[in-house]
Amino acid sequence: MGFKIAVAGATGNVGREMLNILEERGFPADEVVPLASRRSVGTEVSYGDKTLKVKALDGYDFSDTDICLMSAGGSISKEYSPRIGQQGCVVIDNSSAWRYDQDVPLIVPEVNPDAVEGFRKKNIIANPNCSTTQLVVAMKPLHDKATIKRVVVATYQSVSGSGKEGMDELFEQTRAVYVADPIEAKKYTKRIAFNCIPHIDVFMEDGTTKEEWKMVVETKKMLDPKIKLSATCVRVPVFIGHGEAVNLEFENPITADEARDILRDAPGCQVIDKHEDGGYVTPHESAGEDATYISRIREDSTVDNGLSLWVVSDNLRKGAALNTIQIAELLVARGLIQPKKQAA
Image (tube, rainbow, N blue to C red; front, side):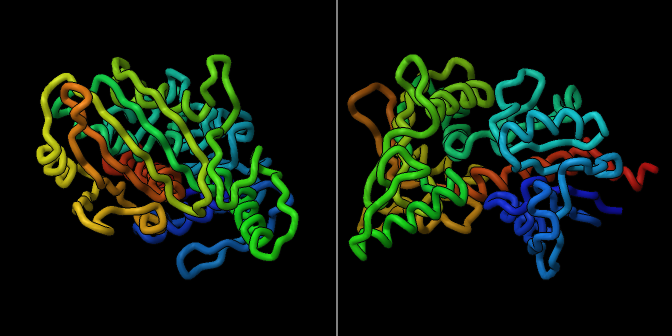
């Protein structure tokens, strides 16, 4: 007997990716129900070779549903996730709504799988921010080896992190450049085509943006509260795939060769690090892939025990949909959840 899975926000970029990955990975689901707002009811979405019709999230009865993969945005999750959890359905939420709640586990299965045990307090599990996810996947095995003290990271984040509106704006502005049409910024504060914008999410009192703050708080929650982290998050004219230039300072000595060997054996990591033209991975090449790719591993001679590296991942997959489904797989693998129909 398999599980009954609901996907809330099934018509969005991440929701559609969740449906694809559920089928690709052979998740043990007997029934998958796509949910969205009332205006999307009847919209068709793909699940493997099947076509499913979207139902309304509002008023849906979750009492016989085992897991809800929530990708409908923070305000919707704040409203619906507690209600869904109270009906005995485990919510795995992709928004920022629950990441900083101490009663809600924040999980990357390669990094802190044991923390998933705490989900029963609210029946909610949070998925980290996309930029944090790929960073901690690369940091975890190195932290275990030599203890990271300080991180300085500059992100190069694709427009798909802003949803369909961001992707549409890049496409429309790029076309406008070529045909000499006026360029209008709607989603972003400045033109994104052929440009970089050092501003993701809102500004905070200390001058950082909320995206940068998320990386600090989430890394501390999942990996180690002692780690000091400084981030500069930049939106770049790439459709899918985030890149990160990462500088790490360790308590204990570690060489680039040691780091390379450790990362080659680490779950979720793939090292492509040849010191030659093209011997590294770019965001474009990460699109559609599950791995977190690590390149340009080198020692930083300006600090004791320092390394620099380049980290790339598909933000819609590992940064969102894939990680959500890996959390569901973790619940199943550890026997933390049983199909309700079987239990009945």
